[in-house]
Structure formats: C-alpha cells, structure tokens
Image 1 (cartoon, rainbow, N blue to C red):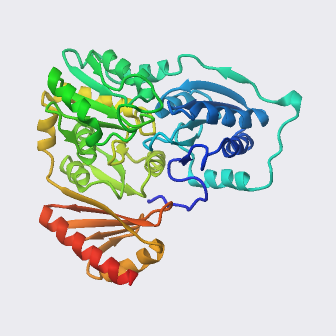
Image 2 (cartoon, rainbow, N blue to C red):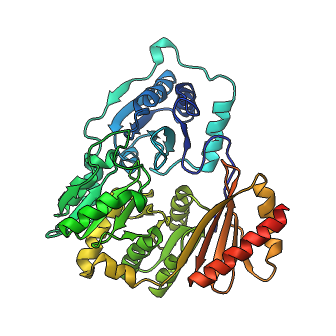
Image 3 (cartoon, rainbow, N blue to C red):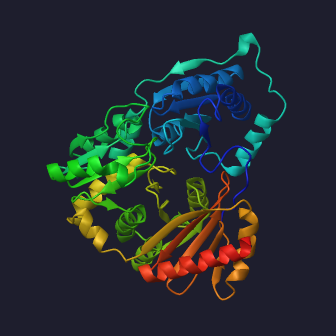
Amino acid sequence: MTAKKIQKRLFGTNGVRGIAGKDLTPELVFTIGTALGHLRKGRIAVGRDTRTSGETLGKALKAGLLATGCTVYDCGILPTPALQYKVRQGYDGGAMITASHNPPEYNGVKIIEPDGTEMGDEETLQLEELIFGPVLPVTPWDRVGQEIQVPDSTERYIEGILRHFPGSPGRGMTVVADPGSGPACITTPKILEGLGCRVLTVNGVMDGTFPGRLPEPSAEGLRNLADLVRACGASFGVAHDGDADRAVFVDENGQFIEENAEFAIVAQNICRQKKGLVVTPVSSGQVIEETVRNEGCTIRYTPVGSIYVARTMRTLIANGEPVIFGGEGNGGLIFPDHQFCRDGGMTAAMMVSLLATSRKTLSELARELPERHIIKDKIAATKGAEILASLPLQFPGCRIDLTDGVKIFSKDAWALVRASGTEPIIRIIIDASSPEAGRALYQDLISRLKTIAG
C-alpha cells in the first residue's frame, strides 16, 4: 500500500507558504479562513510561531473563521505539534500560522484535521475549490463566531510527552537546547527539565527576526550550540526549526548528527523494544532501512512529505499492521504511541531516554550505524516533469521506484530525482555505500539528464 500524491494549486505537502505581504497577504489568509470555516464548521483552534508577520496573518485567519460562524480558540504562540495535540482534545480542526524552516520573511498556514494530522490531499483539494471559487458568503451579524483565548496551551502537551518517560531518566544529564528563538522556547526546556535534566539554552528568547540563526537548524547555524555543548560537558545539544516539529542533534563533542543517522538511532532503540513496521518517505537515507532490518523490523516507504507518512501509519494500524515508528530523514520523527505528526519536543525527550537506557554516548551510537554517504544537489530544469518521464528509459538495467519522482537503484547506491513543484529545478539525492560509488552514480546520472534535456 502506497499513498499517492495529488498535485494542488496553492498548498504543498506542508501547507501554503510565501513571503509575507507579497505572496501570503492578509487578504489571501482571510480567504483561507473563510474557506476553512465553510469546510470545518465548529470549534477551530488557531496558533502561530514567533514570526513578526504572525499576528497580522493570524488575525486575518481568525476573521475569516469568525465571519463563517466558527468558534475560534486562540492558542497564541506554540509549537505546531502542541497545537496538533490540542486539536485532538475535541476540536473540529485547527490552523497554524507558520513557515516552519523558511527564512524570517516567509510565513504560511498549516491546516490541522480533528485527529491532529495535517489536512490530506483530498480535503485540501476541497479547500482549494472554495478558495479559488466564487466569493464565499459570510454569516449575518447575529450569527458571527466567538473568539476565546486559551492560556497555557502548552501545558497538556508537555505533560503528554513526560507521561511516556516516568522516573526522571535525565537525572544527572546536562542538555543544551537551541529553540532558535521559536515557540520551542516555552516547551523544550520544560520538557527536558521535567525529565530531570540540567538545561542550558542558546537562542532561548522568542524573537520573530531570528537574530541568532535562521529557522533551519543546519550544521553551520548550530556552531554556538556546539560550542556550548563542549564548554559545559553536556550529553548532547538539541535544536529545532521555526515551529518545532523537527529536532536535530549535536553529540557530546559538538559534532552534528546527520538527520538520517538521527532517525536510525531512534529507530534502532524502538525496534529493540518491539517488532513491527517503520514508515518513512522514499527520500530517507538507506542507513534507516539497513538499521531497521538489522533489528528484525520492516520498512515501508511513502511519497515525500510527513502527511503521507502519518496517514500511511494510521491506515496500516487500522488494517491491523504493527506500526511502531515513522518519520522523515530531516529530524521530523513520528511516535504513534504519542501522536501522528512530527514532534520535536517528543524527539528531544526520546533522545534523553535512549541515552539513559543504552548507557552510551550519542557519538558511540552514531558510530555503530551502517556507513552510508549522501550527495544532495539541484539543477535548473524548466521541463522537470518531462525529463523525469524519460529518465527510467535511460537506466534499463536498474530497478526503478516511481513512488515519488524516480528512484534508481544500482549495485552499491541509489539516486532519487524529483522535480520541484514550486521552482524550475530538479532535486537529486544520491545514497551510496562509499564515496566512490556515490560519485560514480552522480556523474552517470548528470550525464543522462543532460542527454534527455538536450
């Protein structure tokens, strides 16, 4: 069973995003709000990250919802997974104003379903029909909605995470947290402290200009985190993206843990406790599959995007399949015993727990993983879809996977080639058993792409 991607006009795999005031205007967000109000009448929870445009766009979204008669529960600034946890407590839906890892000038809207997952493709197409259709009617003056402020919206979320880790597993452990000036400032330190950890922070004050680093937690941007980890002898450092649905790590030596290795470390720990299926996109690194299979578990692949992972996990479980873990190779991990969405706070807590139980350092766990080498690149291409349609014919002797883009398997490596839905580019990922095998497949692939493009 594989989920199928559907091309949408406005929304991507993680909501709609654009430069605030240019691509993403208050007028557009108001229209999204009215469309959502018509589609999901009732109680709607709304939240935002720390971006400077968040308050304006949040008010536009709420105005659209109120104009259709919805009751709006304003949860203020909080991580996306905290809002998703909130929505599951009896709301008819939710909306998060965030651009996740994009630069500060961007913002966006993520729509949350009553089960806490992001809105699926079919439902999003219905929403887009309303957005691009005739002007939507609003309710009369005596039937407009009501706005209710929800203080302390993160308390149950934090408690829900801590409930999975009794006994203060982090006692005696120092952890450095880098919330990146985003909403994790008010959650991750409390989660770590609740586990018994001594917590130090960098970029720990909410600021929508992101003065310390960009919202994308890259190895280059986490140098201050790495320096503090080394200086204080911490067990590890954890950093989040702009809405804290992802978490990435540096080890006790300040070395960045590549996100696929992070996934593999957590998956290994979970697979040693119980057997079953691990769900991840075709873009995830081979180290994940090898680690999962080495522990006697099974991997299941989906199209790229956390929504496809989460919904595949739910469908498999509904069909009686033993799904134990899922997520993406970018630090976005999904714990089905907790909730069906990427959760950076839960991921940070899980790292504390597995280090405590394994009695090994993070660098030791990383060194034990199968060795893989990854190359990522992108090339300009105005006819990406046409090129990808012809690409399988260039590799007649190779196994081809068309789940999302074109995935080509050679003896010691694979390549995933996908056309961007928003830019005239083709994205390439090479995953190989050695640097030499990776370079050879990359050079062969580029040569064949040039042949197709003419």
